[in-house]
Each structure stands twice: as C-alpha cells, then as structure tokens.
Image (tube, rainbow, N blue to C red; front, side, top):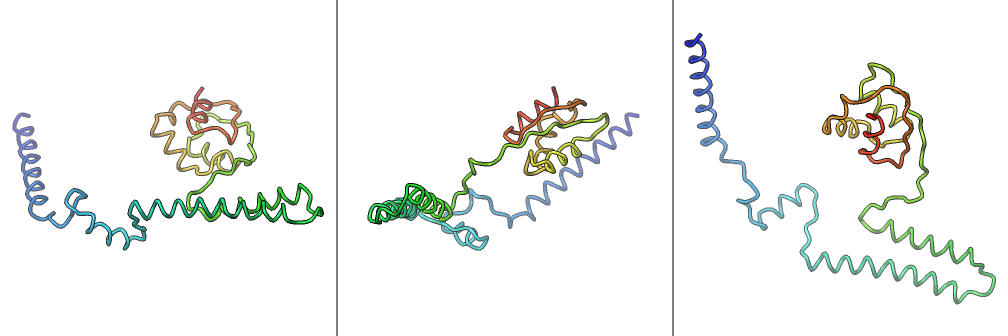
Length: 185
C-alpha cells in the first residue's frame, strides 16, 4: 500500500513540475493588464468594438446630452406658450412627454420602464420538480426575464436544494432574492 501511494505521489509531483516548466517557457505570449500600457490597450479595445474616450471627451459628451435634453423640453414649452388658445393642457403635456421620450432614446444608458405592469402568479411546485423547470415556468408567466440567470442564482446561493413543494404567491416586482426566499420558505 505504501509503495502504491508513493508511486502516485511521485507521479503527481512529476506532472506538476512538467506543467510548471511548460507554462514558464511556452506561455510567454499572453499579456496581462499590468504589462500593457494605455496606448497599447486602445487599439485592442477599438478592435473589439469599444469606444475609448478621454475624461475631457466624456465630460463634453455628457454636457451635450444634458443640454440637448433641456433644449428639446424648452422648445416644446416655448411652442406651447406661443401657440394660440386652441392648444389645451393635454396637447402641451403630450408634446412635453414626446420630447422627453425622444431625448431618453438619444441617451446611451438604458432606462427602466417605471410603468411596467406587475404580474401576480400562484406557483405550484410539485414533488420532484427540478429548479430548472420552476424557473422556466416563472419565465413563461412573465415573472422573470431570464430563466437560466435565475436558475444560476438559485444554484450559486444554495437555494436549488431548498425549494419547497406547495403553492407560492410570486410577482414580477420581486427580486431574485425575494423569489428565492418565497419558494424556499
């Protein structure tokens, strides 16, 4: 038994030494971020489709976007003030909302729609039902957007083994944490 263990240990040691030598001598082409200068990174990032801005360019772009939004809202307000009395308050509100949505579409950051309808659903979990099937049902009912992402969350935080059978009230306004707590309690 001792001889077998020693032979196995020597084999592991030999394999480790061979791998270390191979990585030391043959893996010299990979660069880490510490080794690259900012001038070397810019072409690599541009090649991958990213846009590189200096801090001054970023600030000026932010100011232009903010001023364009203010300008569009001001134009609509001025138009409403100069029009004759035929314009009603509803028309002014519609024009203002339209201008705001146009400027929101021009910005690069995605906005969350605050007026989304909250969906209520009674989830029935049966014995032996895997967490992947539960997340698929939740996605089909519009409670979550991505079943695989929620399933990964359940597995990552050890909820997948704690799912309890029965009926559970869930809504689309719940976070992953709240959904996981609901189906495990």
